[in-house]
Length: 329
Image 1 (cartoon, rainbow, N blue to C red):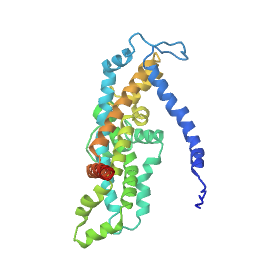
Image 2 (tube, rainbow, N blue to C red):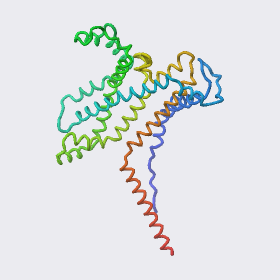
Image 3 (cartoon, one colour):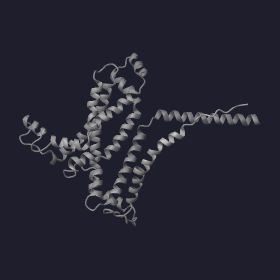
Image 4 (cartoon, rainbow, N blue to C red):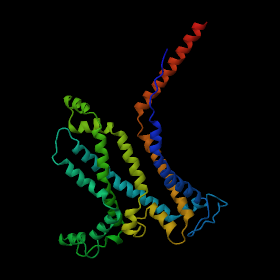
């Protein structure tokens, strides 16, 4: 007689521990998102307006936003600023990752350098904005003093009235703030690679460059995808530095979509409906671009292997079914 052993199931405790997150997600993320999507189809505007209705033409707010010149400028600025800061950010982060994880050149004080490179990421955006505003101040500021003392300029340069200079400063701030975080994430991915692979490559005579591009990069593809997607989401939602630094100026040079949405919702006529429509348009754009990144960086070999496994299972089932039918006959 077989006796069935009763085990203890701990799965219910996992559900209990997940309740706080689920409740917080429903209240502070899902509900605001759905409510924002709803407002985009209404005539809601003005403070404390609870008497709003669905528009006769529900997509009217979306059409007005797409036709808005400031929105198009802000979207272009957002994309340009993100690309201009992400390319050097990922490049420097990869170089530092290769430096810190090198198996041939041991570096003393790695922990100190990691802390120094990561430190800008923990400084608040308001502090960073005040710092760089002081550095590039006019007529007296460290940068202007340096330019005058070196003889590069005769008179102080007003950086905050130049569209190009203002945009480049915002780009540099974004790069300086986030390259350390990207470096830490990439280093974590590299440390997860088995040391045996590097030992085999070293025995085969591979140099540092070959090891990095043929072993390290392919093995941190998932981490690179995570970095790309999170940087895309953060870059297209860029708000704090452009707003606190120059409030989108001069002449909309640093106006991003998040600053545009803030201006629509909380200044002037309090156009909550149009701000909601712009928010949902950005949500669609971010979701679509994230999907494109997932598609481009998918593991083609793994997908091919999964298809072959499924095909083999189908053939095995077919063969087993045929064998049963033949036995019955």
